Image (cartoon, rainbow, N blue to C red; front, top):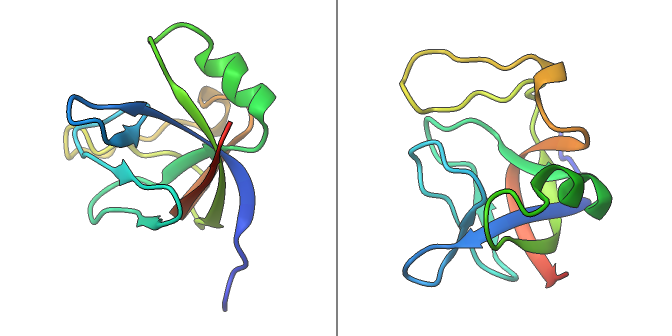
Length: 114
């Protein structure tokens, strides 16, 4: 069944090449470009977005240096938990361990810089 894209907030950082990449990496580089769909890489957990700018800034704040907030479109994932790929073992975080407002996606498109 075709799932419509939804609106959310994607938090990114710039790497040393000036590319927008995931705010928090788990060993797998995921690059985002404005106006282009980014697919969930093979052997990678879902892409994470926030439902509101308030939830994104509340979680990220000033803790981890400069971050970029983008309005985005995303295609929801069926996942209900986030699974980092870091060690190739199954590490699953329960729903209450993730930031409030986190949504899971298979694809994300950066739409507008916040």
